[in-house]
Structures are given as C-alpha cells and as structure tokens.
Length: 321
Ligand SMILES: *[C@@H]1O[C@H](CO)[C@@H](O)[C@H](O)[C@H]1NC(C)=O
Ligand SMILES: *[C@@H]1O[C@H](CO)[C@@H](O)[C@H](O)[C@H]1NC(C)=O
Ligand SMILES: *[C@@H]1O[C@H](CO)[C@@H](O)[C@H](O)[C@H]1NC(C)=O
Ligand SMILES: *[C@@H]1O[C@H](CO)[C@@H](O)[C@H](O)[C@H]1NC(C)=O
Image (tube, rainbow, N blue to C red; front, side, top):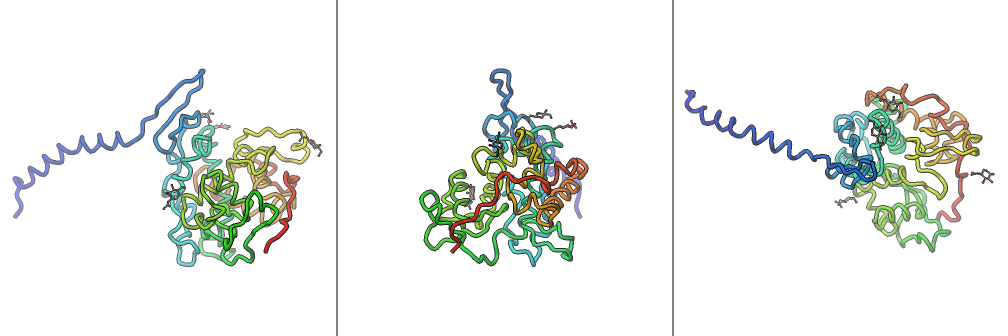
C-alpha cells in the first residue's frame, strides 16, 4: 500500500522545480531589442526577426499564425492520394519566412493587414499546388500543397536565348517545382542568385527541401519580376502607387494586381476565367479559415484582374526542347 510519506519527497521536488521550469520558459522567449535611429524604431526579436528592422517592431508571423492554422489551411496535403506526402510542414514555412520578415513579409501594418498578406500569399501557393477537383473529399480548396513538383513534365524548359546569362546545365530539367512553382532556366537562375543557391545546376534542391521551396516562393512574392515593375508584396500592401497608365489599365493596389504581376495574361485581362477564379477562391477561403473573413478582401475591382491590362504581355520562349 502507498503511504503519504512516500509522496512527500516527490511533492517537494515538484515545488522546487516548478519556478525553475517557468523561468526557463520565459528566458526561451526572445526579448525584443529596440533601437531608435533618427526618430525611427528598429527592432530585433530572435531568429524570426534577426536583423534590425522597422517591421520587426510589429508582430511576427508565428505570433498570429500557428501550427493548427497551417494544418487547417492545408488539411489534405498528407492524405495517401496526395503527391508530396510528408514534404510540406509549418516549421519549414516559418523558417523560410524568417528571411523575409525583416523586409516586411507578413509584418507590415496591423494584425489584420499582416493576416491579409499571409492569406494572399498562401492563396497563391494553395491554388498553384492543389490537386483538388470538384468532387475531391473536403472540397476543391482543401488540397493545397498536394504537389511539390510537376508530375509528368513534357519539356525540360530550357530556353537557349538565355545561354549566356542562365545557361542550362547538361542533363538537368527546369520543370515546375516548389510552392509557387518555378519553370525555365531563366527563372531558376535569378531566384537561385537571390537565395545564394546554385539552382541552375541543381534545380532539384527545390523538391528536396521544403524550407528552400518556400523561400523560392516568398522570394518571387517579395522581388519585382522585372525592372520597373512593383513586387507582388508592394502591390498588395500598398507600397506601390499606380501611375496614370496603371489607372487606365485598371491596375489598383490589391490582390488582383498580384495575379497580374505573377502570371500576366495566363490569368488576367481575360474576363472571368477559371484559372483566375480558382486563385481568388483559395485566398477567400483562407481568410475565412483564419477568422479574418472574406469581406475584408475588399471589392471585386481590387480582388479580380479580369478587366486589367497586363503589365507584361507573354513572352514566347525561343526553344523548349
Ligand atoms: C506596425 O503596426 C502598426 C499598428 O499596429 C502600424 O500602424 C504600423 O504601420 C506597423 N509598422 C510597419 C512598419 O508596418
Ligand atoms: C488596420 O489597418 C487598416 C489599414 O491598413 C485599417 O483600415 C484598419 O482599420 C486597421 N484595423 C485595426 C483593428 O486597427
Ligand atoms: C534546406 O534549405 C535551408 C535554406 O536554404 C537550409 O538552411 C537548410 O540547411 C537546408 N536543409 C537541408 C537538409 O539541406
Ligand atoms: C505610359 O504608357 C506610354 C505608352 O505606352 C509610355 O510611352 C509611357 O512611358 C508610360 N508612362 C509611364 C509613367 O509608365
């Protein structure tokens, strides 16, 4: 039979240890370091915001987007019929985002503005990596991050026009890979340079490392695809101010313009087409799932690019052997 005397040392031990445990927990939380330079506040906050930045004085992504929310958004990605089971996870996303949070990714404006940008970015990702179709269980919007690469590429996407700047490596294929799939040597090249990874010789790195796959996607969101154009991030958060031509072309800051910048005339300026609507649907669904609500997305002129003229009319590659 157990008696009280046997438990007494255990109880004492718990009493002794508990303050130590909570102290250890608190010291594990990174403390915010604030510097003021010329009246502007710059903060660092541990690994997620390790370079001093005005954006780091606000919430970081893991403050408002947690594992269960990632699981909610991408609920079918590890189902047996998905095509990248076990590849994508929350940790990889947050680690990838850490590189860009000091630049304003998911850290610009108040919490609502931050969650809108996160939903917009992930809406693109969900739509571009979905294997959902009308009758799929959970509905067509539950299948984001089902793929991490193009399954049966019909081409190696090597464009010889760029043989001096982004030469194709022998035996290598530049088919679609990643969270916002990259195609073509002329896209793997600059993204690799930006991330300091030799993607031109090793495009397969993207399908082997989820952190890198998310980084390549966020890079495309944060950097202008062409000189003189805004980045999708700048167009979304309102850093970009439309000029007269933009206004005539119905290009306004918001989600519609991010599609215009990322996909041009394959999605925009074609009226109310499926390839555009599926991206919008993912974004709106994620706003609902994150508790922001789709009404925060704004009016159709902002959300859609059906009537926009494209920034960058499509370019036809010179070879596609
Ligand atoms: C930080 O958040 C505040 C409101 O919560 C917002 O007004 C401010 O613009 C944000 N800072 C940056 C750099 O986005
Ligand atoms: C958050 O910022 C937006 C502008 O970006 C503003 O319209 C909205 O009212 C703000 N929300 C809160 C809760 O402060
Ligand atoms: C995956 O990529 C990230 C970011 O480039 C890198 O830090 C990490 O070491 C890579 N992981 C592996 C297993 O190579
Ligand atoms: C507006 O468009 C015209 C004609 O296409 C072009 O010549 C001009 O440079 C553009 N202006 C700006 C500010 O982009």
